[in-house]
Length: 200
Length: 200
Image (spheres, rainbow over the protein chains, first blue to last red):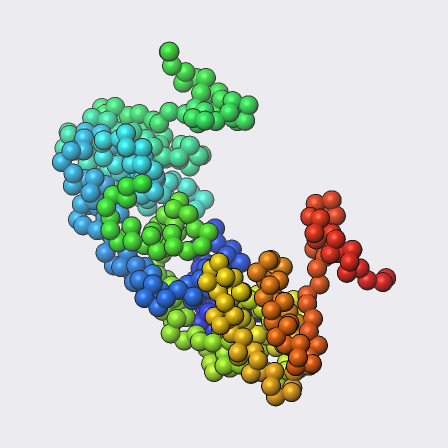
């Protein structure tokens, strides 16, 4: 669609189009919204982008995003350092943190093994994980990669890698989501729910 | 949801949450995406926001967004200056422009009359429209406000205002959308489609 050749506007639309899940119509809507913001708000938005890039780095222990050397979880004295939950992305850690149930620490791989996408074990934060396991403080590693082919493969790869260290290696439970409906659950999930049944 | 107190990240998420149609989960996804962009791309994004604000102003004739004194449509020698299509927002003008069928000019009101939202005729670009009609060059004004209560009211208000000037004032046709289904069309639309029927 012609954009009247208003170059700065077109450029802003293109920037929004780059974002995941944002199509050209939505990008337009967002660009016009930003254009209609008060100037100070637009400045805040623009600064937040640059700031995030400047100030956020990876935690030196768990590779999660952090604005200091160590992330808040690794810094915290109240977290259980003997349990590490291995996740694919910082957002997965965030989701687990949202439960309020987990008191251990995380380790963010920043991806999964996916040869088709050129992601091998070397591209992931695996050596950082191994470094954490050397001091004997850790007793359990929970594999919390996603239940996808790549996530499973990564979990398998890691558990084989970690087995010789004599740690307890666990995997998040599969089953029917709470509030879900048996009728609509897929076969594999149902089979796994059956397999992992527990006594009442 | 706790965001680990990573302040710059939280701030970026909040910026995205301000955008229309972006909920907290999507804002998170977008913020992490921006964080994973190469630095130069993030800079481009940030600059595009500031640039759009700095460089874009309203066309002195039609009030549409423009990066020069006049917008490309008003600047163009090939557009029919005798027809003005009145729209609510720049995006509406863009949508009409997308058809490639319209060769006249636009006039952007930047809103609709909506007393509940504190929008009266004075807040809209109406005096700029009246100024354009004084030179006798214009012969037709097409009301292309949205078919909503406010859009209709605005079109009515304007047409009463312009009637004394002896111009031809038209309204976009109502009817069934192309590719639409009679069965699923609402009653009002169907009634209008019947009313506006044309000979084959």
